[in-house]
Image (cartoon, rainbow, N blue to C red; front, side):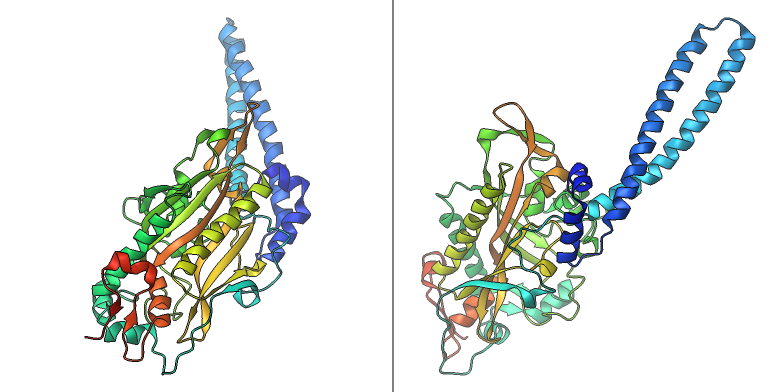
Length: 422
């Protein structure tokens, strides 16, 4: 959410942001409603003051006739006030809905574009493997190696359900341990976070109201979190931190749940797009300084890149274009890992910063050294997501006989060096 004062002073920036992000948003309507809301607020405050004065005056009247007339006037004033308050509630509801739809301002370096096809590659790392045999996809490899059961997964959980088995489970644990070891000396506090969250946290992170269809809701008015970013951003909601505490850096493990409501028929095969998965997430709360956000954004991205380099997985980094970027985001990098069976790179990490878009919604502030309060800035990035990353590991490390070599960085955690057909 942006500051309404900023929106009033910069409506053209909001129009340009909506256009760049390919969002349908009418800033003119917001400003009209905002003007009406401010006018109604003034009227109500004036009527309340008048009502309070009249109430005090009635209490001092002794003449019954005069008092009866004053009470009648007071009731009429109360009725007018009630009507104004009812009308204000309608106006305020529209104002709040429009405010929740305002897009964040993308960084000037974000390119124009309609979709992920228009994202701009900025660098690559690693050599794409050359196989002298017919490459198997991850589903074939995992079935031959007895690493997954998709049929029973669907029987138990429905579409996109799965059971990971045997070495795939141990590889997953190895990856999580690798990540926490890699971040041990980087100043990130390790956390296990709740998977059940209140609606406030989903609104605060910008997932609501637009993405409600992609979230699972329980009967207790709680929601299953789609990423550790959501509970992490709620960690300091309605708090005022000290400037010297920032930046706060977290590394959180959590199960994640997504309905994938808009992905019907997309990536339906295998474990690339599933309803339930596990992720380690990086998150930073920082000073309200753009250049600091830029620096920390590069740091988050570098941390993820180093993990892929340690795993020796070829990847590229792309700057996400306006049309492919979220409403809340200022800038996003996607890291895409090479998938041999598809002969293309696929997203494995997403690194973003938001300025105070999220913290303003969640009221997360800090007190400066001169005593002023400001909203923190927020950033996040995937550290590792499983089982998705297993796809690139299995496919890039496959052998002619159908076995898979374990990446060197994981061998000390797995206790085995190769996964062989059974």
